[in-house]
Image (cartoon, rainbow over the protein chains, first blue to last red):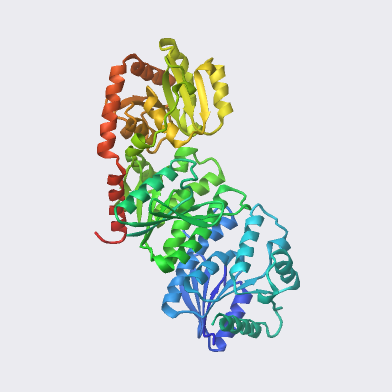
Length: 195
Length: 383
């Protein structure tokens, strides 16, 4: 049974998905540790069983892609430290922006990785010069994750058709009533598969 | 020690001097009993051994819009490979070379919780200046490497001060270790060449070896050529290296020396070694040179060099002992010093012999690798 979850996200306080999921899991008696980016490093208890740890980066980058790649190094460090303290049953990354740390921590700990891809570069339309390389990261995270969750039809179809992620590890969980429970079910499923 | 080295170039993939540096350093470390694994770029993921060094090539991506993003992506893939390898190998430290490997070095350090040593071979400020957003990013990555590394190695004494003033790292984690040179290669791997493929029998080869970029200052040698040829019509300039050939050919035509200047493009190592030995002198007209390995290569071939009094060339050439210094970016000064060499061949031979002896004493890889292992030991808290 999944008891401890490491959540990775770019932000926390404006991120309803992560806030609600963390809170729900904590209420189910699971230990949740979230690592996210902020302007300073701190750890706080959001509620019983739900802790949030912010990391920060000492330099700026010239674009969001390069910034994300460096920021992920800090997530890896914090994620490893938390793993050493608590051990986790599942790593749950969010979007390409935490994909490098998600994939590396999976390799390091050999624990299952669930990725929620909220939108793909194909859906967003490759608007900037880094669209292609971001899409590459989305593909890699789809390739290495044990399960990929999408929250809307457009993204689900893009993951399936553009990034060719097999149906066997792809879920569409719309943000309606029981989405958090369904997410926990996926954790249980991938953990069982891994065993 | 179990060392993981990251370098974007490693033989057979050679672009600049970092590839040779990493090969020579890693194989000497292996000979000294260390276990060295090298992560480098390659078109496909594969592994092979070179003289006891375990090499793993990793591709990057074809989708990167610029070199920085390309290096970031490569670094991420290298770090995943490092984590895989570490299950068996249990690396003790990571040694990253130059800005392109800073994200990999830092990522591996933070993921595997091992110390990082960072060798900085040159700076963006010195190479091109900080004139664009990308140059600023590269400069920032260089700073980030010095910030995150447990120990920093700089390859020149002057360059040590450059890195200190640019990035201001704590002095107790900075080290100066020069590049080494594989002297035996000059004796065993030089390929026989037909001099007539490069110059006539009666001509003296004035050799230039390096990338054809602004930093290397080739134009100053070309502008010096008429003054050299006026006194020594027997001089023949052989220019070895890749880059903007047409640009430099057009300068040679403009100053009327095109027929005395042979641009070879890229040449295999064995031929270049022979050219170093055959040349009357090698000229290094660089305007920025953190180390100046070419002067040591000329010396290893027992020939004198003429090089700018800048950066590492201040130490790799000893004026009037192993070669001659010129003012940087000063064609008249180059012409004067090359003419001195051409005017007194006995003296030139004497400088060459002294250069070879100095290289044998100070720049053998055996010594440099032991010095580097000393820094590794510091990073590991062994002393």
